[in-house]
Image 1 (tube, rainbow, N blue to C red):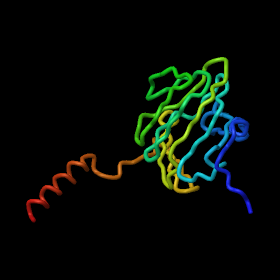
Image 2 (cartoon, one colour; image 1 turned 135 degrees about the horizontal axis):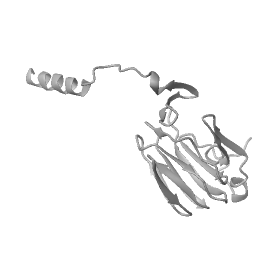
Image 3 (cartoon, rainbow, N blue to C red; image 1 turned 45 degrees about the vertical axis):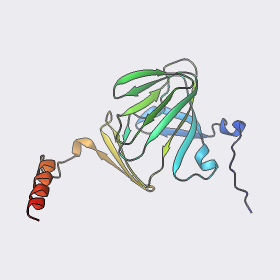
Image 4 (cartoon, rainbow, N blue to C red; image 1 turned 180 degrees about the vertical axis):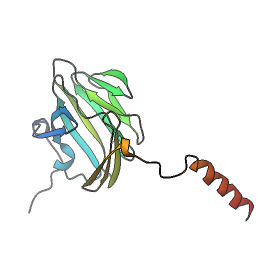
Amino acid sequence: MVEKTHIIRAEKAFEFKHTISHPWNPDTIVPGTQLDRMVGLRRTRINVVRVPAGGVASVFHSHQIEEEWMYILQGQGVLDIDGQEHLLGPGDFAGFPARSSPNHLKNPFGKSLVCLMGGERCEVDITDFPRVGKRLFRHGNVMEVYDTSDAEESGPANIDEIVTTNYRKSLRNE
């Protein structure tokens, strides 16, 4: 019988055995530890990552469904939120509710940055990458990537007005 692990000791948490990277940005080679998977969490993501000097933690992005957050443990980083840069250091926390501004964390400094990063693990999510012109649709383990330049309008530009007008008409006719 395999014993369930509920506690991850610091020496294991900071082994950084997993590498997180993103094909749209070669600077995102980030060593980390997937704490959530080590204890069997399925609905939340929690990683401890080390962003090397000159590296970035992710591609500039925003989520339509999942929330995410980061907490700085050591070092300094610059958090780009919708084009505005914010200096972060130990103890600083940033959170992004679903449909927040696009963001990414970078480390332009000479020492590594260590932080906790996490968020929800929903069955479906849509992630926008505005600086590379991509949208990712994920359903479970299946991912589809779309170029935003190929997007076509799928309804009238005034759809909100049409729905509201028709709703009001239906209330008057009852």
